[in-house]
Amino acid sequence: MIYLQLFFSFLKVGMFSVGGGYAAIPLIQSQAVEACGWLTMDEFTNLVTIAEMTPGPLGLNCATFAGMRTAGIARAVAANLGALAPTLTVCLAAAIFFERFRKSRFMAKVMTGVRPACVGMIFGVILSLCTTNYLSGLGGVSIGALVVGAVALALLLKFKVSIPKVICLSGVLGVIFFGVLGLE
View 1: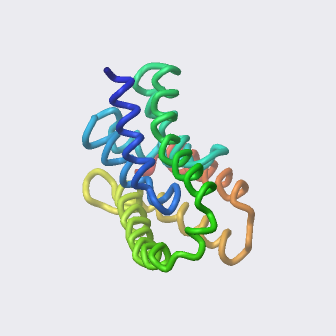
View 2 (view 1 turned 45 degrees about the vertical axis):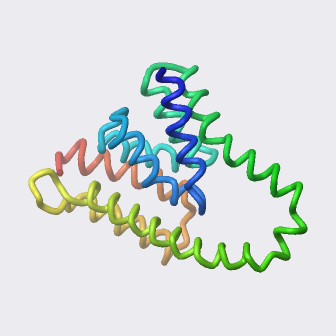
């Protein structure tokens, strides 16, 4: 039963996550945290962080983690198959009808409507992750998290430091602030 539940939950994610991995995050949260209870919100936040750092598509990395979290490789495979099924189906159909889709005014209008929705979902994810990461449990602001976020943003935008280096430095700062110094 759990195999089918994982498959169909991530099938929904795969079907409706138009716009890539960031657009899939609220759908994955809805399925894995709220609807099925496979993950807590803290585990989900960690999942997104780990999925961003590991190679591969974010949705598949999340499906793998959620499947493994529910006990095993076979369940991770079921979740991945669910996440992949819509993409494979659409790609196959697109390959067959590529010329028609490319010249279709209807599809151009559909995409004009879908793009802003994707941007809105991405902003929703940013707000959700910022709330989880920057606000401490007592309603205060986590100064350590704000410092790490500000340093990472400055390194990326102003100094053009590569993303892997920023991730590593952020991890080191996290260990210092939250492990050694005990900040919240």
